[in-house]
Length: 398
Ligand SMILES: Cc1cc2nc3c(=O)[nH]c(=O)nc-3n(C[C@H](O)[C@H](O)[C@H](O)COP(=O)(O)OP(=O)(O)OC[C@H]3O[C@@H](n4cnc5c(N)ncnc54)[C@H](O)[C@@H]3O)c2cc1C
Image 1 (tube, rainbow, N blue to C red):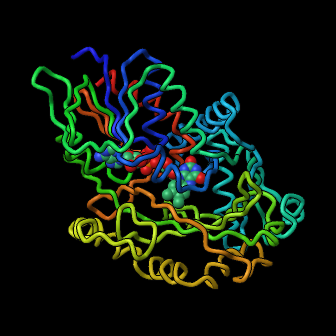
Image 2 (cartoon, protein in one colour):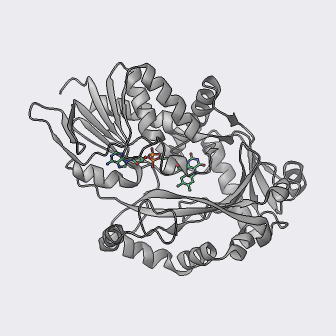
Image 3 (tube, rainbow, N blue to C red):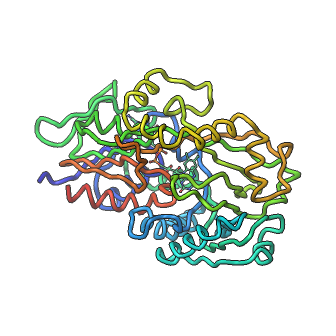
């Protein structure tokens, strides 16, 4: 086993930066490569900015463990580094009798994961959210709102102080084993060498893994999540965070209402197949990305399972503000189409298996001197510091 002294981290999103931080804390020399001209340019800079509590995830899974501990470590990190954060709690609301069983199951899951959550009546829910519609609700105390890009800036400051080599506008274009061990990464202008490599390339992570010689079974399929914002004069309708009971067969939480740190209220995200891996609008299309998605057998199996009615309804909701508003009105009936203004979008990197199933948990694969993060969707921003520590341990064991 080669003694690891230097590491190249591919990807300067929150997971790559948190991993670089954990490696630097162990005294290793770290280089971070980010192809864009800023940190957190993709998923990390286009998300809901929610510090999740950890109630949804299968007990014992990486997601469950790392979101519960990540909720604490992320809030502590933010407070220690002057990053805006507020632990405001949230409501998950059952809007019909048919959702009550799923709400109770969620309450049990929260308990199994050690998350403080309480089933409450409509009258109690209205003490938190006077405009909410519900048959019953689950009140979760530890959910918070944060500024994840500001977390990245704070990590970058610390990395600079520790002497890390931080490179923006630098894409890893080729990866191979070094002649005398370790790894070589071609960036176009030069070849960088290190003892080890960590792949935190988000939407490109399967391609980076293949570049490094792995043959990952899972393929990244991009799902765009679009947001609206409540008009400022209607923002009073929502005080905190209001979520629906999620469909347990889908990895997404359903469109929800989130008060941001600046007082604005965001609505969304939905989930539609993106026509480009980093495609934030319907008109962003990549023939190469589409061909790759279409050639993968898992895509067709997924389509068979979800295209109708789930996928069809998602597309119709994406194209119609009235339909989007109708989903929100189930949670807060006073919200109408005229209250909504289009806001940004994010693209989730969701790993898909050849059998058409979406990988539910974080997926991490190792090879000698390499660790690859092949599925880190929500709540990976919440869990980033925990993932970073875990990856640094995996790398030193690999
Ligand atoms: C719509 C949406 C809402 C979400 N809401 C939440 C939430 O509220 N709370 C939460 O915890 N999580 C949320 N998530 C999930 C969270 O944003 C992601 O799990 C997290 O940001 C993943 O971080 P990352 O560093 O792995 O990926 P990214 O942030 O995507 O970073 C990967 C980076 O790698 C770079 N890269 C790729 N290829 C190369 C290459 N070859 N060379 C160099 N650089 C490369 C990319 O440019 C990119 O910057 C949400 C995600 C989305 C899309």
